[in-house]
Image (cartoon, rainbow, N blue to C red):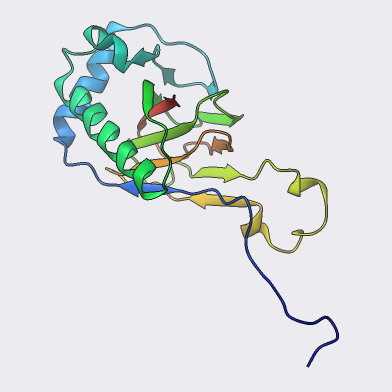
Length: 197
């Protein structure tokens, strides 16, 4: 028997990471991504070097509907998001999804950032050469400012070793970055923001 009586123990304020492997024509999607890069000038955002396409939205499908495999990815993504919301008993529905293409060459990376008011964020990894960098998610609840978890790095950040052909989905408030691509091949991903109503 202890001196502090009955214990009640529970985790609070959990986040989540969910992933799937969409059934897509990998080569066709890759060709469409390089074609998209040719058709649209890149923009600077969280990327340091590399190509970041303009942002597209599913509400304006005409701007990307010629890229059929990319359109298919977004359709599968919508179904996966709906399933994720249902499995977590979240009753909100998707209002819009915006997405963009990232092509990171050798030594390109994405700085620590968040996606503003996005409710969910995600990334589909199309090409992940060996040593092309990890996707790192960090806590942003103030836990970095105390010593409570100083000896447990796994409680402060999650390192995801991206797998080619996998789509990752997580809450939009989480800060994250992508390590530098140390390979001599392109790391290619399609990232998205999900807005709920």
